[in-house]
Length: 205
Image (cartoon, rainbow, N blue to C red; front, side, top):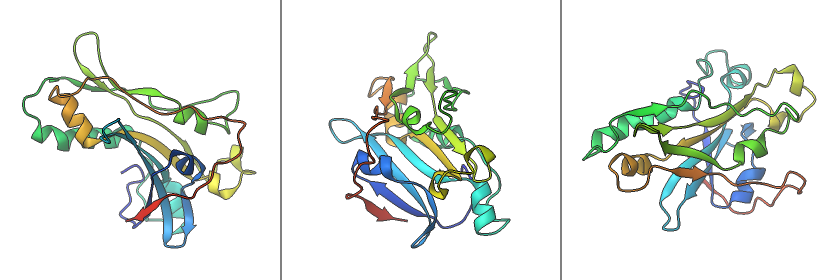
């Protein structure tokens, strides 16, 4: 949805957080373009949110063909779609007003090339507003492959779109009042630490 593409992309689901941190969305994987996923879970193993490292529409079009993708969307579009599908099955409805917060972009003016740690840092994905409405927040950033600011960076760091999304089952539970509205996902990473090992992962399509 973010790249508006029907292209087949290999999805790699990481069980280990450190492996996900090290991973990159790549255009030339062994099975074609490859995107990465990590699920945030609670103590019972319920998925609260999903983090994805995706390819941009611009990079897909330049590498595969000019009509591969339809243009870059934003992370909140998928949250809206999750709500549209999930709300059909909610009973009873506790939160009748759902607001999708507009601000979702991660920026780091001091270190524009080091946005990843800021994206991974904990944030409130869902919360209850002052008037009892439910807020859903996305958090993401885009590095276009052709952006001259990153021309000297390795190719694997470019042409990427990173997003956090609310998990469908968790959103349904919030809307029904089965779980609290506040959902915090993310983890702080050491910017000075060497890249972690990438030993544990699952592949799927």
